[in-house]
Image (cartoon, rainbow, N blue to C red):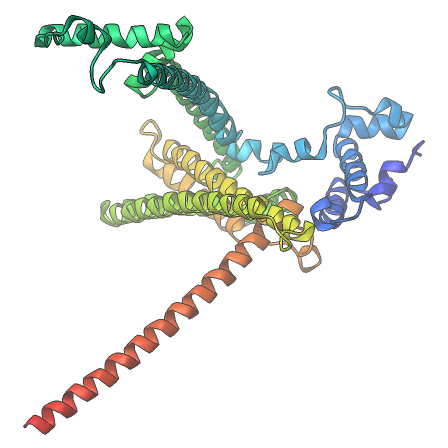
Length: 474
């Protein structure tokens, strides 16, 4: 018996609902009530927030027990309720995938690197302001000099009074004079010591020594964290497949191992971007395992070609990641220009449509980067598991077969027909953006095809005319 059903009612489930039923209900409501899907509805945000709050409590075993027993007042998370935007901060898999892929570091790495390089941008801006001060002072001095009576253009005040020109300095003196002149200009413009230092740095360009050292230190820290992540995931992977590798591997054991993996998939596929992550994991397991097995059968020759193929796939993934990020940036720039232009065409509906497109493109770029990171880490994990020279080859072959079994199930993971509409709002936004790009590319391809067809037709007519002219000449 529960004392309060408000959260259950918000998600449209019974108090006896299972974890999976609660997750499915939340996914359906998250997309139908998301503010982006309900432009103009002032209640959408509050409803979306209420659903997020309900799910945050009911998806946590301890909070759910306290809520069932004491009600809402006793079921508040330690850090308070998160805003839905922050709640979706763990978009790609969340805690459910930690044992499989570890904690994604892409956004953390980008944020830290941007914090370091942002210092450089701030210093460049201050140096630019210092330059403007100096330019303004030079213009003022030039204007004063032009107003001085009795001076000829190009003559200094000293030369007009003495009647002699200033002697030309020798080479050794010129550098000293230039430096002194620069210092004098900075003093005359009233630059502070900090502005003077920044201007000197700006002339040298690039990151400062401190910034380079900070980046190098962070890179070393990042490598250490990644190595620890690979080590931890390798141990967890060995534990997971040991159910099969450390037994007689008979038919019953194999079926039980497959069934356990499928049950794991049933939960994971319902997470945000769950299917995409499962497919990425499965693809990596299959690539590394089959490459290893082939290398054992054909004296390493077939394995060599498989490794070449893997490198080709890596290069393709790298390009896809970069091109998706460029596409997102171009869409943001396009929106900024449209907003700046304004006019009657720039309606609230148009703005909302652009915002959805930009969000979708950003999510697509973030997913490509996250997928790249996931597969890169898992390649190292598989290499560690399959190429451990302290383990006999026969055992490593068994590990490879276990990865094939798991990888196949992960790669073939699908949602049931009644779950097809249960996409998270962010997955839907990314899918919509991708569809619009495909339509745009399709129109572009058709336009280019028509141009080529017209050019080809024109070329054919020209050739026929030339041939006819040649016939008459003959």
